[in-house]
Image (cartoon, rainbow, N blue to C red; front, top):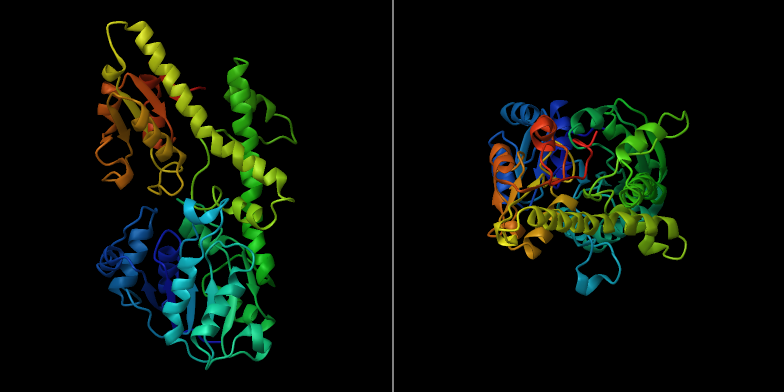
Length: 427
């Protein structure tokens, strides 16, 4: 089926690259976002996030007239919903319950402009059943149209789920090259979605049903979370036993069937730190290993904070003329992984915030990929460049292995008061 106009709802770390790739295939793309700054930035041919090469693709797409951003949805032939799915607030959630209100809001926003023959795809990582819930919200808003849950293959609107599965920092390449899992609510829904993604996807488009597609994404990230939890738990055991965990893992990985991941200060990002809880929330009695892995990874930031406190104590013991107010701590990195600006669910950000809440002295944050601090750190932390952070700090806390930080190994590792959570200097 032809897709003359494609609409992408949500112009964040997934939505904007997806919109740009469609536009690069000479398709008219309408991007929709509630953020006026994002809309204005994109319409100038610029980007509001950090992702290699995305600026060039967006600029070309806007200049050539294939990409335009707006606050209000407009008619299109296909709608891709790529909005956040966070947790409910503490007062609402109970135990890490998913918040589908962004999906609900997006559904109600596009409903007025739907017409017979349109395709709606949920790309947001979601708990099992979210695609069916989206279809229900659309049906409620547009009783004049028929949907798959009531009319099956004969529905006016096609609905499917296709989770993103890309690596930040490599999004443009992986959008094109990676396989896609496509779960339609009917066979015709799946076929329509495949024909849309084949406009740019070079990998295979593997068809299943909507629920399995939703569970596939959660499973992929839960698998990674469990493996990271093993590495993080191993790092805490090695610390207790006075063993260099980085050397240990390097040696163990020489076994032909062992591939232990690298430990860190926790797990961040909107996917791995969140998705396993979606499984736990729907099958709490069965998801025992998945829950335990989440608890291990969620506990790692507190372990790092305790290491920082010990480092401060060691510094004061070596410098008895000083007090804790005289000790400057530099936190290197706020993003959830290396060489990006994404702070979502970042353990580095959480650790820095907790340090400021308990440490009476100056705290510096060195994050080369952002220009201003997030609101939760404003007024309590000074955003510093790397040279100043290295020069001023009495205690260095490496939280993210940005390339800039790895390049200063000799200067940083000579300090006696370093907490290297990424192993960038420990080898």
